[in-house]
Image 1 (spheres, rainbow, N blue to C red):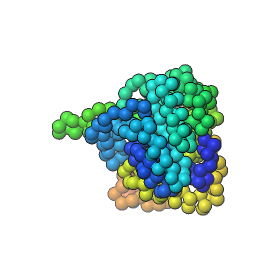
Image 2: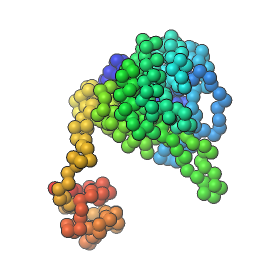
Image 3: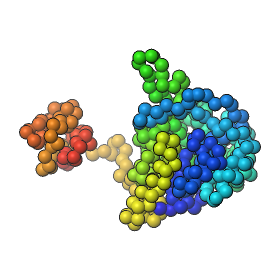
Image 4: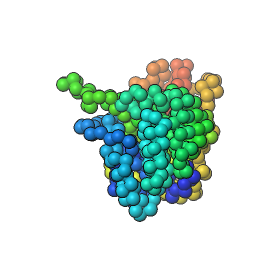
Length: 368
């Protein structure tokens, strides 16, 4: 399933996201060799610092990561970029800075070293300075425009979920000349606390990533797609081909995979690409443009949601033995167990729909 993103012709829409797995040219090369349509380097800054330890916590659902930047010096990326591109492939350089001039300096360097595109990482869940900047459309315009006017390669801007005005920020970076946007960056978090010792899993704030933030990423992509006509790369919790398709159907032209690579290795990229190819062949979808934005046709504002009477109903399937999930979950006491079946009491049912998602065999559905 081919795609064109940032004006770059990609063999598939799967991009390996910025992170420590792409900390050098060898890491980037692994993503390309695994079959990714493109790879984003770990975020590059002008002044690196000693890395902290420990820096990653994981609870089998999501990850908290406090590694912020590549530990390779700027000039060292000339060598790393050469390694990364030694066998072909699209490499996108992720860069971060606090001022337009510093950001421009990094972008010019990465273009000179051979990057095919630039991703501006202008938010950081570990602190507040960049997060405040990422929420200010005027500042984001200034930062983006400074880079766009000084390089010839495509520039995309990574947006932050912590910015509640994400549509305004997207409009600002488009006006500034950005070729596209990516959404979302990781979300500020504390992953958990050991209640025996009182110690957090990591003793500072960090960026939350993985499956739990996918709904946030999906909402952000849809919001941007409905607000401004600009190419979008979806990020957040992509663990299989279905998740990639979800992002595309909400308006993305490509998706980034990060935490799934960190936890499972680069073979996860190969798996997602393979399954996406199989799915697209079965559906007759040769290009992302064939399904991009399809789900947006079904999106409604809150005021447009149907409010006429509706209740749940059951089909003829027998319930799973001992299962009472719908009975326990119904806050209206509208479902009762009847032997091997359940019964919906119509005059109590409000049509909230929860039971239709909770039932493990799909026995319940809404009746309009």
